[in-house]
Length: 107
Length: 122
Image 1 (cartoon, chains in turn brown, orange):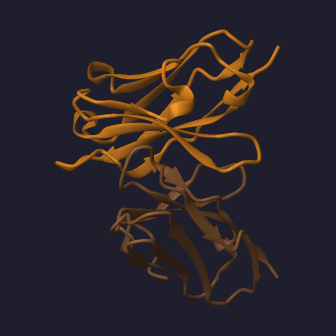
Image 2 (cartoon, each protein chain N blue to C red):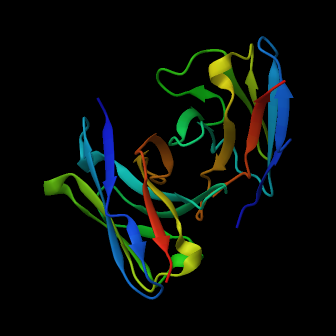
Protein backbone atom coordinates (compact mmCIF):
# COMPACT_ATOMS: atom_id res chain seq x y z
CA UNK A 1 0.00 0.00 0.00
CA UNK A 2 1.11 3.55 -0.71
CA UNK A 3 1.61 5.59 2.47
CA UNK A 4 0.74 9.30 2.38
CA UNK A 5 2.48 11.56 4.88
CA UNK A 6 1.28 15.11 5.47
CA UNK A 7 3.18 17.85 7.23
CA UNK A 8 2.66 19.65 9.43
CA UNK A 9 -0.15 17.85 11.26
CA UNK A 10 -1.37 21.25 12.45
CA UNK A 11 -0.50 24.88 12.01
CA UNK A 12 -1.60 28.25 13.34
CA UNK A 13 -1.94 31.13 10.92
CA UNK A 14 -3.48 34.57 10.69
CA UNK A 15 -6.02 35.91 8.24
CA UNK A 16 -4.16 37.02 5.14
CA UNK A 17 -1.26 34.61 5.59
CA UNK A 18 0.04 32.38 2.82
CA UNK A 19 -0.16 28.77 3.94
CA UNK A 20 1.61 25.73 2.51
CA UNK A 21 0.83 22.10 3.33
CA UNK A 22 3.05 19.23 2.19
CA UNK A 23 2.14 15.68 1.24
CA UNK A 24 4.63 12.93 0.47
CA UNK A 25 3.88 9.55 -1.10
CA UNK A 26 5.88 6.45 -0.23
CA UNK A 27 6.29 5.70 -3.95
CA UNK A 28 5.82 7.44 -7.29
CA UNK A 29 2.15 8.26 -7.91
CA UNK A 30 2.70 10.50 -10.96
CA UNK A 31 0.07 13.25 -10.58
CA UNK A 32 -2.74 11.07 -9.18
CA UNK A 33 -3.13 13.27 -6.12
CA UNK A 34 -6.22 15.02 -4.73
CA UNK A 35 -6.77 17.51 -1.92
CA UNK A 36 -9.86 17.85 0.29
CA UNK A 37 -11.05 20.35 2.87
CA UNK A 38 -13.14 19.31 5.86
CA UNK A 39 -14.80 21.58 8.41
CA UNK A 40 -15.94 20.25 11.80
CA UNK A 41 -19.09 18.15 11.57
CA UNK A 42 -19.23 18.45 7.79
CA UNK A 43 -18.44 16.19 4.85
CA UNK A 44 -15.15 16.68 3.04
CA UNK A 45 -15.13 18.95 0.02
CA UNK A 46 -12.99 18.26 -3.02
CA UNK A 47 -10.54 21.05 -3.85
CA UNK A 48 -7.95 19.76 -6.30
CA UNK A 49 -7.43 16.74 -8.55
CA UNK A 50 -4.51 15.63 -10.71
CA UNK A 51 -2.20 17.43 -8.28
CA UNK A 52 -2.87 20.92 -9.63
CA UNK A 53 -6.34 21.14 -11.25
CA UNK A 54 -9.05 22.99 -9.35
CA UNK A 55 -12.43 21.35 -8.94
CA UNK A 56 -15.32 23.35 -10.33
CA UNK A 57 -16.27 26.26 -8.11
CA UNK A 58 -13.11 26.20 -5.97
CA UNK A 59 -11.58 29.69 -5.62
CA UNK A 60 -8.23 30.37 -7.22
CA UNK A 61 -6.62 31.17 -3.86
CA UNK A 62 -6.14 27.39 -3.62
CA UNK A 63 -3.38 25.89 -5.72
CA UNK A 64 -1.63 22.56 -5.89
CA UNK A 65 1.71 21.48 -7.25
CA UNK A 66 4.05 18.53 -7.45
CA UNK A 67 4.43 15.17 -9.10
CA UNK A 68 6.02 11.84 -8.33
CA UNK A 69 6.26 11.71 -4.54
CA UNK A 70 6.18 15.31 -3.30
CA UNK A 71 3.14 17.57 -3.42
CA UNK A 72 2.03 20.90 -2.00
CA UNK A 73 -1.26 22.64 -1.32
CA UNK A 74 -1.03 26.43 -1.04
CA UNK A 75 -3.65 28.88 0.17
CA UNK A 76 -2.55 32.28 -1.06
CA UNK A 77 -4.35 34.50 1.46
CA UNK A 78 -6.02 32.72 4.35
CA UNK A 79 -9.60 33.77 5.07
CA UNK A 80 -11.81 32.89 8.06
CA UNK A 81 -13.72 30.30 6.02
CA UNK A 82 -10.45 28.46 5.23
CA UNK A 83 -9.83 27.32 8.79
CA UNK A 84 -10.37 23.58 8.48
CA UNK A 85 -8.58 20.24 8.16
CA UNK A 86 -6.99 19.41 4.80
CA UNK A 87 -6.32 15.91 3.48
CA UNK A 88 -4.35 14.64 0.53
CA UNK A 89 -5.24 11.37 -1.22
CA UNK A 90 -3.43 9.26 -3.78
CA UNK A 91 -5.55 7.59 -6.42
CA UNK A 92 -2.77 6.03 -8.45
CA UNK A 93 -3.49 2.53 -7.19
CA UNK A 94 -5.70 0.37 -5.00
CA UNK A 95 -6.12 0.77 -2.08
CA UNK A 96 -6.69 4.51 -2.29
CA UNK A 97 -5.01 6.12 0.71
CA UNK A 98 -5.26 9.44 2.52
CA UNK A 99 -2.75 11.50 4.41
CA UNK A 100 -3.34 11.98 8.13
CA UNK A 101 -4.64 15.51 7.71
CA UNK A 102 -3.41 19.03 8.48
CA UNK A 103 -5.50 21.15 10.81
CA UNK A 104 -5.28 24.86 10.03
CA UNK A 105 -6.16 26.93 13.08
CA UNK A 106 -6.48 30.61 13.82
CA UNK A 107 -3.45 32.26 15.42
CA UNK B 1 -27.41 20.12 -8.74
CA UNK B 2 -25.45 17.05 -7.75
CA UNK B 3 -26.77 15.43 -4.57
CA UNK B 4 -25.81 12.28 -2.72
CA UNK B 5 -27.91 11.26 0.29
CA UNK B 6 -26.85 8.38 2.52
CA UNK B 7 -29.11 6.46 4.86
CA UNK B 8 -29.17 3.23 6.83
CA UNK B 9 -26.76 4.04 9.63
CA UNK B 10 -27.50 3.31 13.25
CA UNK B 11 -26.43 1.34 16.29
CA UNK B 12 -25.75 -2.35 15.71
CA UNK B 13 -24.26 -5.12 17.84
CA UNK B 14 -20.91 -6.68 17.00
CA UNK B 15 -21.28 -9.55 14.53
CA UNK B 16 -24.52 -8.22 13.08
CA UNK B 17 -25.22 -6.73 9.66
CA UNK B 18 -26.28 -3.37 8.25
CA UNK B 19 -26.95 -2.08 4.76
CA UNK B 20 -26.20 1.50 3.81
CA UNK B 21 -27.84 3.21 0.85
CA UNK B 22 -26.89 6.32 -1.11
CA UNK B 23 -29.43 7.84 -3.47
CA UNK B 24 -27.99 10.25 -6.02
CA UNK B 25 -29.51 12.92 -8.24
CA UNK B 26 -28.48 15.70 -10.55
CA UNK B 27 -26.21 13.65 -12.82
CA UNK B 28 -26.17 10.56 -15.02
CA UNK B 29 -25.55 7.87 -12.39
CA UNK B 30 -24.69 5.20 -14.98
CA UNK B 31 -21.65 7.18 -16.11
CA UNK B 32 -19.89 7.37 -12.75
CA UNK B 33 -18.09 5.11 -10.37
CA UNK B 34 -19.06 5.27 -6.71
CA UNK B 35 -16.99 4.98 -3.56
CA UNK B 36 -17.59 4.58 0.14
CA UNK B 37 -15.18 6.40 2.46
CA UNK B 38 -15.39 6.28 6.25
CA UNK B 39 -14.19 8.35 9.17
CA UNK B 40 -13.97 7.01 12.70
CA UNK B 41 -14.82 9.52 15.46
CA UNK B 42 -12.02 12.06 15.76
CA UNK B 43 -9.91 10.30 13.13
CA UNK B 44 -8.92 10.77 9.50
CA UNK B 45 -10.46 9.52 6.28
CA UNK B 46 -10.26 5.89 5.19
CA UNK B 47 -11.25 4.61 1.76
CA UNK B 48 -13.51 1.55 1.98
CA UNK B 49 -14.69 0.44 -1.46
CA UNK B 50 -15.35 1.39 -5.08
CA UNK B 51 -17.65 0.07 -7.79
CA UNK B 52 -17.07 0.81 -11.45
CA UNK B 53 -19.63 2.82 -13.46
CA UNK B 54 -20.92 -0.33 -15.15
CA UNK B 55 -20.66 -2.55 -12.07
CA UNK B 56 -17.92 -4.60 -13.76
CA UNK B 57 -15.36 -4.16 -10.99
CA UNK B 58 -15.34 -3.77 -7.22
CA UNK B 59 -12.39 -3.14 -4.93
CA UNK B 60 -12.12 -3.05 -1.16
CA UNK B 61 -9.68 -2.08 1.57
CA UNK B 62 -8.19 -5.20 3.15
CA UNK B 63 -9.88 -4.66 6.53
CA UNK B 64 -13.37 -5.14 5.03
CA UNK B 65 -12.70 -7.74 2.34
CA UNK B 66 -15.02 -10.71 2.73
CA UNK B 67 -17.32 -8.77 5.08
CA UNK B 68 -18.52 -5.75 3.04
CA UNK B 69 -20.08 -5.72 -0.42
CA UNK B 70 -20.62 -2.67 -2.60
CA UNK B 71 -23.34 -2.80 -5.25
CA UNK B 72 -25.44 -0.47 -7.36
CA UNK B 73 -28.96 -0.31 -8.79
CA UNK B 74 -28.93 2.02 -11.76
CA UNK B 75 -32.74 1.91 -12.04
CA UNK B 76 -32.92 3.51 -8.59
CA UNK B 77 -29.84 5.75 -8.83
CA UNK B 78 -28.60 4.07 -5.68
CA UNK B 79 -25.35 2.59 -4.42
CA UNK B 80 -25.30 0.22 -1.47
CA UNK B 81 -22.82 -1.00 1.10
CA UNK B 82 -23.75 -4.31 2.69
CA UNK B 83 -21.79 -4.70 5.92
CA UNK B 84 -21.64 -8.10 7.63
CA UNK B 85 -19.81 -9.38 10.70
CA UNK B 86 -19.50 -5.83 12.00
CA UNK B 87 -16.78 -5.00 14.48
CA UNK B 88 -16.27 -2.15 16.93
CA UNK B 89 -13.54 -0.79 14.66
CA UNK B 90 -16.11 -0.32 11.87
CA UNK B 91 -17.71 2.48 13.91
CA UNK B 92 -17.52 5.57 11.70
CA UNK B 93 -19.35 8.07 9.56
CA UNK B 94 -19.70 6.51 6.11
CA UNK B 95 -19.68 8.82 3.09
CA UNK B 96 -20.65 7.93 -0.44
CA UNK B 97 -18.58 9.71 -3.06
CA UNK B 98 -18.92 10.12 -6.82
CA UNK B 99 -15.99 9.24 -9.07
CA UNK B 100 -15.06 10.02 -12.64
CA UNK B 101 -14.07 7.02 -14.72
CA UNK B 102 -11.32 6.86 -17.32
CA UNK B 103 -9.99 3.97 -19.35
CA UNK B 104 -7.62 3.38 -16.45
CA UNK B 105 -9.82 3.55 -13.35
CA UNK B 106 -12.79 5.03 -11.51
CA UNK B 107 -10.68 6.61 -8.81
CA UNK B 108 -10.94 10.39 -9.21
CA UNK B 109 -13.60 11.54 -6.76
CA UNK B 110 -15.43 14.85 -6.60
CA UNK B 111 -18.85 15.10 -4.87
CA UNK B 112 -19.43 13.75 -1.36
CA UNK B 113 -22.63 12.94 0.51
CA UNK B 114 -23.28 14.23 4.02
CA UNK B 115 -22.53 10.87 5.63
CA UNK B 116 -24.35 8.38 7.84
CA UNK B 117 -23.10 7.25 11.26
CA UNK B 118 -22.63 3.57 12.00
CA UNK B 119 -22.00 2.63 15.63
CA UNK B 120 -21.04 -0.95 16.43
CA UNK B 121 -21.54 -1.56 20.13
CA UNK B 122 -23.07 -4.08 22.47
